[in-house]
Each structure stands twice: as structure tokens, then as C-alpha cells.
Amino acid sequence: MHHLIDITDLTVAELDEVIELALDIAKDRPKYNKKCADKTLATLFYEPSTRTRLSFEAAMLELGGNVLGFSDATTSSVTKGETLSDTIKVINSFADMIAMRHYNDGSALVASRNTRIPIINGGDGSHCHPTQTLADLLTIKRELGRLDNLVVGMCGDLKFGRTVHSLTRALMRREGIEFVFISPRQLDMPSYMKHEVAAAGFKYREVEDMESVMPELDVLYMTRVQKERFYNPAEYERLKDTYILNSDKLRAAKEKMAVLHPLPRVNEIAIEVDEDPRAAYFRQVENGKFIRMALICKLFDWRGSDKENPQMHGAMIDPEGMKCPNPKCISYVENVPQIIHLVSKEHDKYRCVYCETSVVKAPQE
Ligand code: NCD
Image 1 (tube, rainbow, N blue to C red):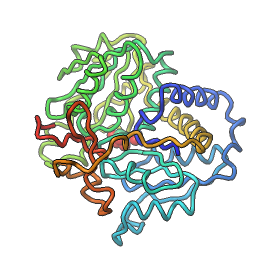
Image 2 (image 1 turned 30 degrees about the vertical axis):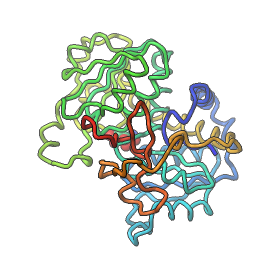
Image 3 (image 1 turned 90 degrees about the vertical axis):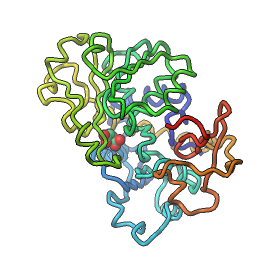
Image 4 (image 1 turned 135 degrees about the horizontal axis):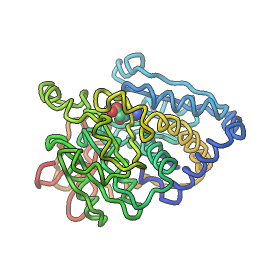
């Protein structure tokens, strides 16, 4: 069974296939309008969303399929205490594929272990958001004509922003990418991501101001400060307006740079920038629908394959008996015996298989 939990669940070749198909869909939409005529997609959104859920639903409807689901978990049995695992088992009888968003890190992996139908992760806590990454890659490809040899600036909340985690992972499998992480120190990239980038042999820099790096960038990926993930509201207030991209700052940028943003925007891009030809974020929304159409088609095509969740390779009960230190990890919440405290070992370190937080007595995240 092929799921999309993390962007690396797709090989680079598979990812390119999805992108190629999305490009064809964008060119010839009528050709695909019956592709999923007998299929139903369930959208289970435990967390607020406009674009991602509607994008999945619009994608499925354009493929001639059906959709069902919920956009507000308070109307689902979760309020009666139902576990995510049980909800997923139930939905298996009603749909052919599930796209889900959940506030706990690692939730989509838990879902994929309890299903007979493909699971697509539409965002799990602050962990991953692989379908946004697909939209981002298609946008970069359409705006700049390539996915290699790029200087990519990611700006804003790199700590809690799940989109930048998935995008970094995807770009690490391309050639000649140079990362510039632009954030206040309190919101910098998680250390597990930085280790991964360095271990893969990519260059990255961390800076606190966007102005000094602006002239070098091919892509500027803006993100919102993720208010809902802060433990301390005063800290959010202090950091929320750290970056505001405006026309003045853009003057120093390359003529061919692309400005992306997963949206929703709060204050981080001034409205005046929308008129700039480099502002690609609304085109990115449309690309999101095309790429989700392509992904749905491909996951149905690949359904017969017996692909395992790569996350589960080498998974074991933590030999030191330690718990995942991330209170937002699904392993805290989901009270099912096989879910609790599984770790995998990489370079002599243990990490939680669900949220990837380090569980060694080592430097803190
Ligand atoms: C992003 C998300 O949900 O992580 N939005 C989206 O899917 N388009 C970004 C965000 O909420 O800031």
C-alpha cells in the first residue's frame, strides 16, 4: 500500500511522475474529468484549513469522484473519546482514500497503520505537510523551469512551520540546492532537520534578516508565525511581525525570483507585493489543486504495490525505556498498545518514529 505520510515516501522518480502528470492535467483538464468516477475520498480535518481541504475536495470533484468527511472534529466521535485509529478503521468502510489533517505530530503515520486504503497526510501538527510541498515543487518548476541549482530562502517560523520541513526534505534530494534559513533564533529550523541537511552534504546558512540575502535568492518561501503552536502567547506577540516583505525590500531581489507562501498570510507579505510578477503564491494555490489531482490518480495506480511505510523500518520499543519528549506527539495521546514509544536508530541516536524528535539524552532540540 502506498501512502503519503512524509514527502520522502515518494522516490524522486515517483515525485517527478506526479509533477509530470500535474503538468498534463493543467494543460488538458477535460481528459481527466472521469478518472475517479467510481471513487470516494474522505477528508478528515481535525484542524482548521481552507485551502488544503477544499483543494483536496476540488481535486477529487474535478476527477469525477465523490467526497465526504468533516472539517471540524467537534462534530466527529473524537468528542466522545474515539481514538484516531478507530476512526480510521471506520472510514475504511466508507471511502477509497483518506486525506487528513490532525493537530498531533505523527498522527498520519498512526492512521496509515490502521488502514486498508491509502492515507494522505494533509499536515500533522508541526511535523510535515507533504502535499503542500508537492504544490511548492510544481510552482517552482512552473515559475523557474527547474528544481535544481537554486538558492532557496525560507523565512519566518521554521520551528513550527511544517511546510518548510517537508520542502527542505524534498529539495535535499535535488542537485545544487543551497538553503538559507531566515528566522529569529527562537524559531529556527529543528536540529533534526539541520542534521539531515548537513548529513546529505548540502550547504545551509542561518540568518536573522532577509535583506542581506535577498539579492542571492531564486526562491523566497515566506511563512506565517504559527500562533496556535506557541506555549506562551506573549512570545507569539513578540515574534509575529518579525518579517514583513514589501515592494521596497523586493527591489534588491533577482528579476526572476519566485515568492512563495503556503498561505494563509497574516502580515508577513504586504498586499502591494501581490501585484509583483514574482509573487507566485496565488498561482501556487491552483498548482496545489492540480498536483493533488495527480497524486490521487497515482496513489490509485500504485495501490497494488506492497510498499511499507519507510518510517517503520527498524522501529522498536525504546530499549532505554525512554518516552518521546514531545508532548504534542501522537504517541502521548493515542492509547493503543502498539503505538506507544516506538523509536528507530540512526547514527547512534534514537528518534521517535512518529514525530522524529530525538529521544537520546543529548543536546536538546
Ligand atoms: C499551511 C499549514 O497548514 O501548515 N497552510 C496550508 O496548508 N496551506 C501553512 C500555515 O498554516 O501557516
